[in-house]
Length: 113
Length: 111
Image (cartoon, rainbow over all chains, first blue to last red; front, side):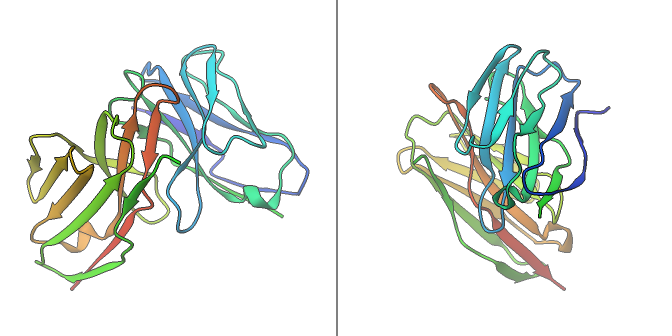
């Protein structure tokens, strides 16, 4: 019963490096999204997708790219890491265009030095 | 900016206490409402959905007032295991549809 699988759990990057955070779900959910969580702030939406081939920007999209080639996978790419991107990242999926429960991955703790 | 606001916390209460969390949201067109629980360094998990008629799950009671754009969560007979951060979550429909999270209220239940 995998649910939402997010990798890696921890990552340290140097400023300017790029990387991809992986997210996969096995529940056939249409809606997937990426959030970042910073101390004292709620989860903020980075990008989301309502189905394969469809993506859109959230509240804080700058510096991140996404793609949705399959229903299952929704990777998040950091193009050129900056210290301001140090955060905890969560991937989530839900059924029915987001109107029902969202299931979260375990999170990725990213530090950019 | 679309916003969800919560009591700032933290709440420190003794075991057995009743504690209430409040939440307000700015978008009157919001469609779905939830309370999530997040343990330290873990992912958020659904505690309960919130319905206009109010709903109860054991020691937990959630209320929604659409006219006032207000959501509440009541925890009765607090347990040590209830210690966590409680997130108020609202789903906006329409353009830019997505979940919007409040900043959370941290609860510590003390022995």
